[in-house]
Amino acid sequence: MDVINAKLRESSYRLTGQRKAVLNVMLENKGRHLSAEEVLWEARKISPNIGIATVYRTLEKLASLEVLYKSMFEGNKYRYELAEDEKHHHHHVLCLACGLISEVSGDLLHELESDLDEQGYKIIDHELKFYGYCPACNKKK
Amino acid sequence: MDVINAKLRESSYRLTGQRKAVLNVMLENKGRHLSAEEVLWEARKISPNIGIATVYRTLEKLASLEVLYKSMFEGNKYRYELAEDEKHHHHHVLCLACGLISEVSGDLLHELESDLDEQGYKIIDHELKFYGYCPACNKKK
DNA sequence: CTATCTGCAAATTCTTTGCAGGACT
DNA sequence: AGTCCTGCAAAGAATTTGCAGATAG
Image 1: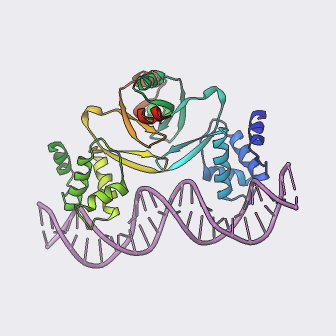
Image 2: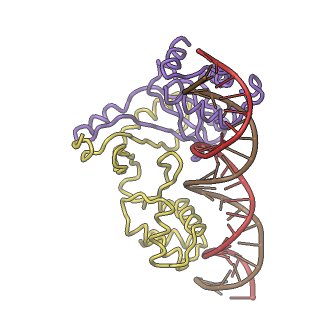
Image 3: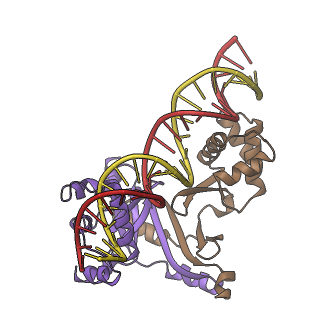
């Protein structure tokens, strides 16, 4: 939290009620992947008049500061999650049955990246998603 | 091509002029990743009155038959590429400088998948994207 | 004070859908 | 003939932007 505050200050970022609300929503949902719409509903419990534009602007800013991770799900929708240092590189498993998003840690990909390195690429980041069934749904089948 | 035709027939799929046009565009751009809009412009050279809706419907159908692969790029836009059997599992490298999309083959991910298997997941597919610089742009820096 | 932030509504961008007419087999 | 297909235009969904008023520092 101190780290987050420091990051915010760095970029002439005003800590308004609405931003506090969005930040609280994200902190209270550590580990979950929320859409902008979901953040809006939660944030309105704290800051009732907050609008969707403000939510988007805030999430965008927080993502650019790496306070949040932003990634695309369901092909056409971003979801945001609190960035936690321990899991800098993590991957998502999306359950095709129930929609559960779980996470896999592990940096299995360094090998592939150094291959690309040798080919002349400079890899900055990667994104990996798995599609399948979560343990609960897999059992039911 | 025979394989494609067979697939089409299987699903009471009519090979109209517009669909031939889209298919030709994709065949002529083997290895490239086209957006619906790009397919539209190319297809109009062959079938001048084709509309964007038809392009989407055709691409969707071809993707469902696994004649094409469909994947999300730039966060908000699908791109389509001809499916070639040899590279069933391949991954994308998106150059942050020039936008070039190149491909990596290799199924480095089985290891991670079997880990998940042991945890009770049933993994059906995965999608991996790398972000960085292609050899040409990396050199220029 | 004054630069930044907000809510609203309108605009954008990509994709999908409804419908009336047209075409393939 | 009858089902499937097409183009058009309108609808949808997610996100962004312009603007005039509000507010943090």
